[in-house]
Image 1: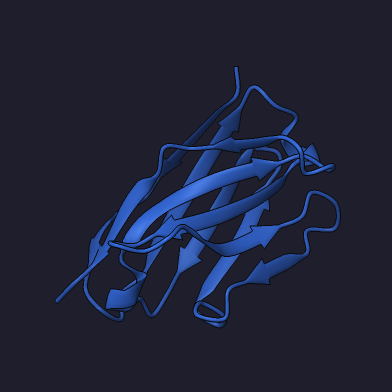
Image 2 (image 1 turned 90 degrees about the vertical axis):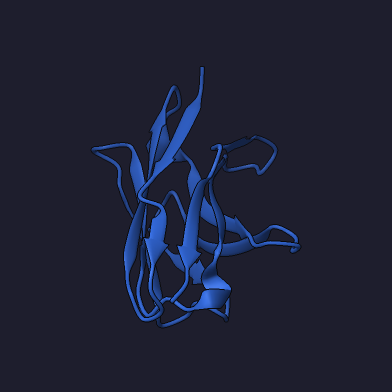
Length: 118
């Protein structure tokens, strides 16, 4: 059974940092592209960042470029999202996603809440 478990969410002041983790089990982690999505209050879920399974190429939403960094540790079956210079617009539930090479299989975590507030 595939499980993606996010952790690291919490409350932080504007300008602060958090690091999210997503621990995967039940799948060949190195063979999956990993992504972080988020859904803010009253908003649709959006892609934040992704990292490929092969060469580890990354992609970011324009709103987080230069502030967020996605990286993976295949030896730990874990993907991370380092979030710096957080602002109130980053407040959301953050979800971890695993997608296979063909894109026809997706797994989701249950999410972790990030609240940015003064």
